[in-house]
Length: 448
Ligand code: HEC
Ligand code: HEC
Ligand code: HEC
Image (cartoon, rainbow, N blue to C red; front, side, top):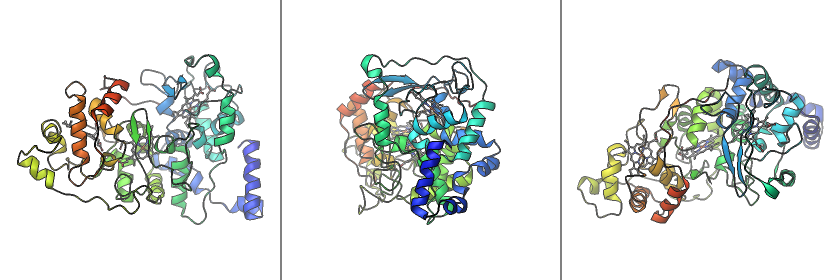
């Protein structure tokens, strides 16, 4: 822990408890110490922390050396940057970082040489890491990862826009760099889940809407914007709060655990950018950790749909499809191109083809994910039993914007689902902005 964060933490403890040393010594470390969970899955403490933080998703690319950097990331309105080499190479990596310098960059985004990182690196979440976990992560990167002599790619942000000093102001306004403090009124498991979801797992980096400064509008559950769903890279990271239809209101804790462990459950399958989270991070987590996250997520209340009637199945469209009655918009496209897998009742075949009836992502107010997966398909889930044999075909060449809009409008308004229609213009926009070639490769990103 750096001197600065330690000082802040102590002042806070003194203010709250009236007695600094007591507050510190009686605190349970279960919530914030990952060593026992690492032992349960049989890897080192530091490697486990790197899994929890999913460093590999950004800092490794399939064709590169582990953690040698390279992923291109868009910074809205400015341009593109690349995730850097975080192997212990002295020249191009982080070999020269002391622990205190590493702690500073992970919590505040200030690099060893003083330059400020763009918040594409989710340090506002990593700031919540405990000191034990930070030290273990540092040891892993320094001692278990091979140094890679791989230069960093320059960003294409140039001229005045490349000035990084505005990031200092950004930090002052938006970042709280204090480690997570367990809530004594909650169970150990709940606190562990909060520590993972708000902190290392940086779930909010995708699932929380951003404000004017591109900051996440909330970093914990004290604010109803937290994890209420947000668009990123033409995918919609859907709401994880208690909303009954488009959130997790109808899910049991066991459904959340299954989804994060295997990439699917009775409500749906992970797709889009969520596949990278499941494949590289959550599927590697211990059962206790998954349970803790589920308990924490189920504590989030309904917001946009509080008071709405929860979804219930209706078989009207099933009967129409079986009778070959295609009077409803989109029903014929659905019947011809989708019903082989998602079936006439919209129920799919668990666990191979996801249901569309009652699936929260299908009822999301923002249809981006539905349009994107229908145009482009999705990467494969690779959970512990190996790659999923089934995946969603891509219809970019086969169907027009109008046909795709109609099929999606149909699934959003059938079998009891209720969500606004989709226009051809919305499909045109995402078609133009996304990559026509789906990546069919099955790859696993390596950490060491
Ligand atoms: C969502 C993508 C993403 C994830 C996840 C991520 N990083 Fe980063 N990281 C970046 C980007 C992008 C940069 C470069 C930012 C810049 O240049 O302003 C970066 C920079 C860094 C740096 C600064 C290195 C230097 O050049 O001095 C360190 C250290 C680092 N990351 C460590 C980690 C660790 C450890 C993890 C996992 C716990 C992690 N990152 C997870 C995107 C990510
Ligand atoms: C890189 C962006 C990204 C990050 C980080 C991310 N998610 Fe997601 N997540 C998505 C997207 C996009 C979807 C919608 C597609 C789908 O259902 O798989 C999603 C969907 C989900 C769903 C299914 C919701 C539903 O209604 O079907 C759950 C549960 C979930 N995420 C949990 C998490 C948790 C827990 C974390 C943190 C450990 C996390 N996500 C981090 C992008 C992300
Ligand atoms: C060959 C089987 C198949 C066909 C045909 C098919 N899908 Fe899919 N679909 C899948 C699979 C499998 C997934 C799960 C994601 C993945 O693994 O790629 C999926 C996922 C989806 C999802 C995201 C739901 C979730 O929770 O994963 C939507 C929306 C969707 N499909 C819509 C459609 C539409 C619209 C059509 C017709 C235009 C269609 N699908 C045709 C197999 C299929």
